[in-house]
Image (tube, rainbow, N blue to C red; front, side, top):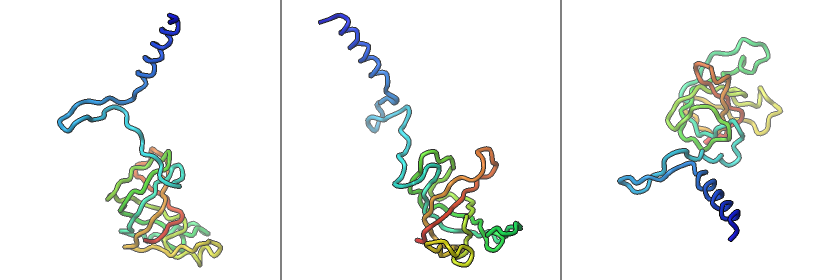
Length: 159
């Protein structure tokens, strides 16, 4: 066999063997993987930068915006939501959410039923109130340096 071919095969084996990102160790429960873990795969149809949740409204902030023409000047837009279930994450989602946690959410189309404020919207959103459970894609509002995390929801479906 050609010595150059042997060296090339040896180098290839070293390179391929060295590309592993995790190791296996023995523990009392059998083999355990340590090291880098693969990130969770994105959920079905979840846009980048979003997280799909099932949430329940636990409190509605009744303060209205003072900005003329803002839909949030006519109906509440902010609520505290308890996450019932995190369905999945889109790539690049930067928020910290988990089952059972509570997050502050700004609803882009208000918490009211949308036919009056957004007559061209289809389908009409039914509105949310304390105790309402819904499914929605949330995205993080603001910058990573913000002291308190706030999230934004566009459209949602009642559960």
